[in-house]
Length: 430
Image (tube, rainbow, N blue to C red; front, side, top):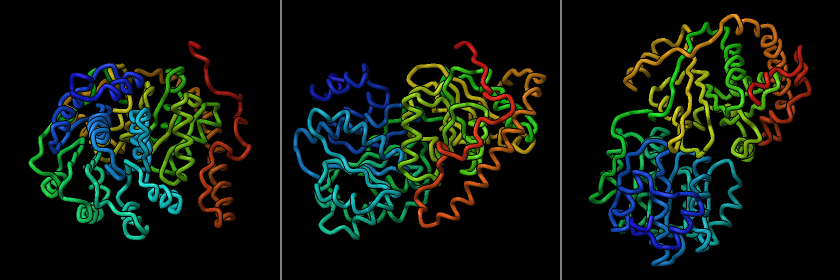
């Protein structure tokens, strides 16, 4: 990192984090950022973007220390916490203070954090506007750096008016970094409004998936999806899995189904409270659980370093989401597998994905007779999962006043593991 002009104290922090050498986007963006240029970074997921903007900001903060120095806008809560973690890890030796300002968390405690005037504010646009309008004494009039991370997603989530409001109340005389996986018309419009004479750093201009990623598909009748999922989890036992579902409800149902069969599965979706989401994520990161079931809220930006296999249990409706989902594996030069389930209803969506990535995917090899042997136990587990979901729904109705305390799959009702035959997993190769 030293060759890129970053000070020694930050280089040491990079070494401690195990960042031996800079990634492509860091090599391109950091020297330009240190020269004081505005930057548009086009980089795929897992490319080291956070380091590309955090290091120049911390470097500048060391030279001219001040409070409320930088604002990072991000589309999701999880990404905000992750960026904050990286800022704090890189800036630990220089005492950097960060505040994460996102929905789903008590506003009062956030107001107190802002009153202490942190160096870096990491926020989702909606909640930041709330504080700009309602928190006494909080403003961003002295801001020196603005970062918009995953800008395409911020705009896709209809945060345009919030972003416009934010741009109006921060100084024009600032440095701006805009990072995006894709260059959409909305992003181009935002670039014109927010950046001055920017330099473009593009690490990959066409959609692509990483070289070391082995991608497969499975064509199966929709009624046997659960059975095939259980078969694959058994076949590839010993790996860590991230399974993508299209809805919160299906994520929850599938997590319960797998837990009834003895798998260590945890859900992560938008209807869970913030603390539960972070709890799920941390258990998975710490390898206390080997299977994370998620909706697309978790498909981008989350730094989950050890996913061996990504399963698209429900095919993504937007082909670009496929790139981001499978980007959870084969990171940092390691290999990984991605398996996409294609039912009779998904053929057109699957063809679009193949067209986008420019390759025909091979079939994942399965032994159909072995799969069918699992059907009885899987349908028993499905029955239990439905009962638990129903009971859970009724419990929630009874506890409307405790609305924040939902989706407790970890402590779900005690029908778990009573499925005929007990534990399901074959202890393969362990």
